Structures are given as C-alpha cells and as structure tokens.
Length: 254
Image (cartoon, rainbow, N blue to C red; front, side):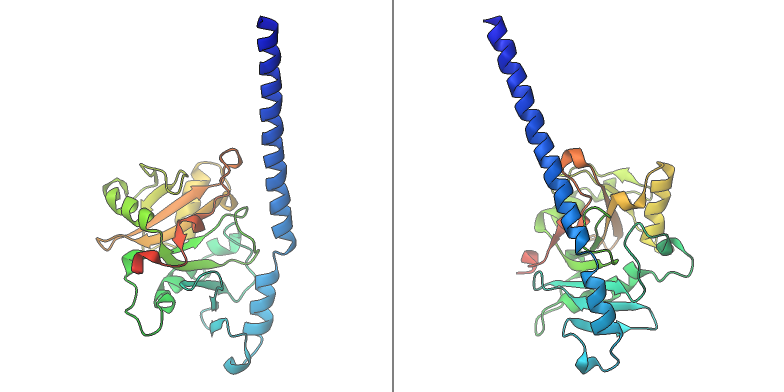
C-alpha cells in the first residue's frame, strides 16, 4: 500500500511539473509573438500621424499631434473610453533611460491633461476620481513604443483605493490589499517630480529594473493623486500590467 501511495505521489508531482512547464512555455511563446509585432503602433503614429502635416489626411485615430510638447493623442480601438498618449520620439517603454533625463517631457502630466478626451461627446465630463493613467511593464505590453493608457478605473479598484487611502503615504509601501489579484505598491504623487523618476528611486533602492514594473496614476475622491506600481512575477502569472486596473467601457460612469 505504501509503495502504491509513493507511486501515485510521484505521478502527481510529474503531472504538476508538466503543467507548470507547459504554462511557462506558453507564456514565453506569447511574449515572443507579441514582440514580433512590437513596432506596429510606432509605425502607425510615425507614418500616419507625425509625418503628415494636414490633419485631414492623417489616420482618423490620430486625435492630436503636438510636436512642440512631443506627443501624440491616439484613439485606441479597444473600448470606447480609451485613448493613448505616445511620444513623437522613439521611446521603447517604461524601461527607457530617456524618461529619466532632465529634458524628457513629463508624459504622465501631458496624458492627464488630455483626460477629458475620453469623455463621450455630448455627455458630462467623466469626473477625475473615476479616471486613471496606466503603463505596462516591458513584459506586459504588446508594443515597443511608450504608450500611456487613459481610461476609467474598474469600480472595484476605485472602491479599494479610496477605502485604504489612509495607508497611502509619501513613500512607497505595499498596498494593504491586492488589486485585481496582484500585489501593488502605492505612494502619494509628488507633483514636483515625474512619476517615472519617483518609481525609479524605489527601483534603484531595491537593485531592480524599471522594465519589470507597470505604473498607474489616479486621483482619489479627496483630490490627492496617487501612484500604483505592480511588479512582474512570472510564478504568479503577473506580467506587470497596470492596465489590468482599467475599464475601457467605463462601467462606473454608466
């Protein structure tokens, strides 16, 4: 009987190991596939938005091209309440050292200033405490051109971040509860410094890499702005996609 039990345990361990290996291989295959198509968004904005002077001749998704401030406002087809802000320069993503340079545009501020662009025409403007900006990690995105998502937060996320607002301080701390099944770090936004630089201070202090993190910015009901960061963890099937906090249908506003 004992021998049979040991045999069953060994078989179970082998099955579990095989399933885990299959999932990891699938994850690697998925990342490889999206990286093969990773320049698609850059090709569109560089050739169909930036390169065309006449707004009427541009791709209809090019909502705004601001060469002075070096960004494009782009309508994302994934959901009606969902726009993107992208640099007019080639910037790969959150891991790019260009974002930490003193002369780098504050893309999060530029994106926040465009937040009213997601409000449906003819309807009241969506209130700031329902909105958020998000950028995914190097491993949780499909495109190798920095793009900041502008959309609504999911209702349950709005409830949790406001419920635990007192736990969000001026320094990075683990958020008291998981958001969308993943651990997040949170801090109050320092308006004098780029969110990328604020995250980078935490990353450097922990000998980590910016590319491992997704980052979101939102406003609480008390008017304060907060940062939420999510670190990639393959073993938890977490790719560092802060975009998981967003609701492109904006159900909270319906």
